[in-house]
Image (cartoon, rainbow, N blue to C red):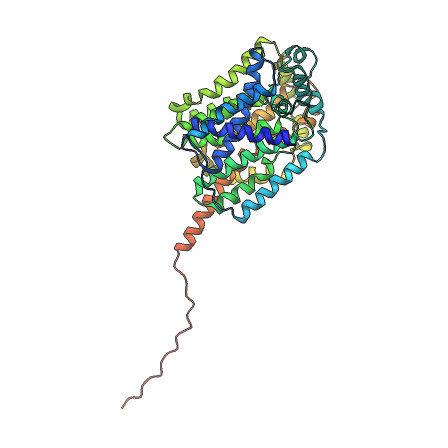
Length: 440
């Protein structure tokens, strides 16, 4: 546990220094959430680069690389006096602590951990670097990006021994980092700590991803956080948040292949809102492109692109009723959340298009792609939906929840303000006529 906590502290400090270089205006919870993401991404890409230049991983080399950015904090401190938490913040903190207990209650148990993510991490650690030959020949889904196994390896390198007992804390930290960005951006949005905390609490359930050990949580955290920061950047004249959000989107592509699709979706949504600033998202393309080149060099093929993809899609479209039935039967977890979220979008569709066009387009497009990818599966489509559909939508779920929050809270505020402006009605007692004076 000490190795995992030490790794998280080091990457957060390194991330604080690097985040300040990228966005000097970001403050508060959003800054610290971004710092965790940037630090984790920096650590993973650093270990990838060491393999590229044929330098074996060691505690000394990794520590030097992590401490180098931290030296910048000595010249330009980034810490500010925190605000006093409110009771809702305490509830959110308890939920995060509960997730940490869940993530470390027992060793990993998911098949994908033993067959993909954890297996890669253990092989890379034993080899003191990425073993591309093993990835090519001995593992399922060789095309999956390596950021999650590299983060898993970081505490083991610092400890000089394999560490998988407490590694779930890394997945908790990424979910918590996303909630910090939600808390910070909502604080800017509503200028109210209480409303920001309530909005964050509403998103906590889908954000605290329970598939610990898999890439679902990291790709969700990096991708949704990137969307929120790009949204923030599009609303401001400064491009710093655009660059920061683009970097997180690029790192999401290093978590799982759906992160690559999210970059394309973000570009389309940004084109609709501000076409002249789309090119500011170039860091996402650059970071994701580095992985695409690596995947091409080592010929890491994906199952979905093998054979005739179009024939498979057309074949499954002919079974549309069968496919839709499978989607309904094997609906994603947290069904009440999805029902409430999509009902909100339907009821307030006009406000979503007028006020939150970027986030609305991005969420709906990514949700469609996540559902549509089942049509290209080379396996039995019902089995694919059964084993994947319960968790895949959660990659975009927190962004959908955020969209509902920023739609509903302003409407509630407007209704309350209108009610306060109405003159109060006074129920006065009926006036009794005065007795008529006698005439003389």
